[in-house]
Length: 273
Image (tube, rainbow, N blue to C red; front, side, top):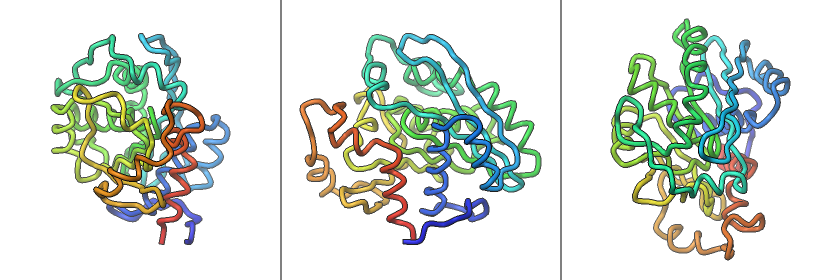
């Protein structure tokens, strides 16, 4: 395994290396502003904008945070996630009905919609200001951040198709929307969206079906850390049976361990080559 030292800003299309670097960008969203700006500069992104707001939706979610880093060839907007023990209550909340999705397509989990709404205008203005020389655009995020990355990509494509992202990479993303929006998303962005799930990660299994579903974009990491383009049948039957506890949100459970961002990064590093 050779871990690349330079952020891949030029390789077109999908690659594990591109996934690794966007996972690094998603992980960076958890850091403070000074750390983000310093690392972005080291990666060759000369401009950084921060997006943050505080609000009170009907879920125990206090704020939304993201950042955009822009270089001469590539722009990345990364959304901050939240820890599984914090996401638990509102991820499983069923008291608030879904809201209409981007461009009037289908429906979205109310908490995700509110979280994105609070920062999307600032992100859209930032991208209009910085995307001036044909740079590629990528959205990324882990956990809640993955849901927001997917929805930001959907909103941009469905409302302003000429500004569509070149790629959306998410890690440990929860189910975000209904089948109608998932299909509209797939038709427009399925070719450039990659949703990584690490083995027994509990968050991608919530909120429950059939109201909510995933977009068709799975990249599955099995219990041995091998990356697959889909979930092999043996994994569905055996991998998910390993390490389970009575409380899947317990800190020692396999579902929580597999959700941590550092475990996604470790798995992607193993698959570089």
